[in-house]
Image 1 (spheres, one colour):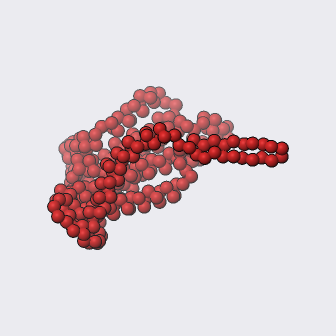
Image 2 (cartoon, rainbow, N blue to C red; image 1 turned 90 degrees about the vertical axis):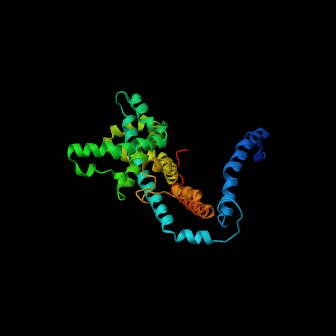
Image 3 (tube, rainbow, N blue to C red; image 1 turned 45 degrees about the vertical axis):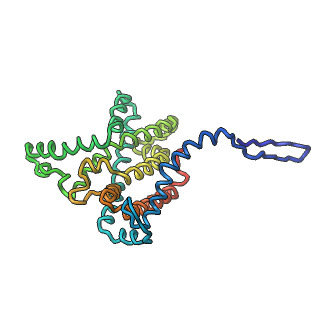
Length: 303
């Protein structure tokens, strides 16, 4: 903890700053977390990067082969398509989740009846396991909706979208958004409740309409919360696995296979070093995206 002492003598003003001193107890509390993080994340990650330059299958003998795995990954259509699907799906889902969550947050902070009960209902999906949600929606997409479409004579509902290579991604976006909206909603509610009511009273006096207040007051004042939700959402969606496995298992064919699924399946088939190279590339790209996001949104944090 640092302190500043000011000594005034006559017309001279001298400022003496003490050196920053950190209490030893801080290090004591930091050490367990740092040790666990290093052993569970940092060390395995470094080992994996080292093995990405080998021909290891996950066990037995191995030898260094340089950048062979990386060169092969750049020319592998399966890897490239999984990268394309993962980033496209993440981008679309981030937009859908944030737009819907923000509009719901505006409604749930307005002067309406039963808003506390509605907030509780809307956050229920975030406490349910992703794989369970995926299996429930899989049944709906493959049985309930086609049955309803056939009964009502609606042709485009008679076939499951999960069986259509061109539409299966839409089902994944719907289910992922359904689970992710509650967490994003809570952050937006916190941001909206932090806006002083006097701001809106002044806007009413000036004759600003509700849409004008939303666009010119609410959105600018919650910009920091938008930044938080976009960064967290994009990070989570890039690592999507359980919902995709439960809904389509990467199909039809490989049209909805994410990077995480490609890497894990490679481990299961003996492509350990090759998929570690893929994982390293994915890590580097993710870090670059995170740095770009932070650079673009610098100074707009809600914290």
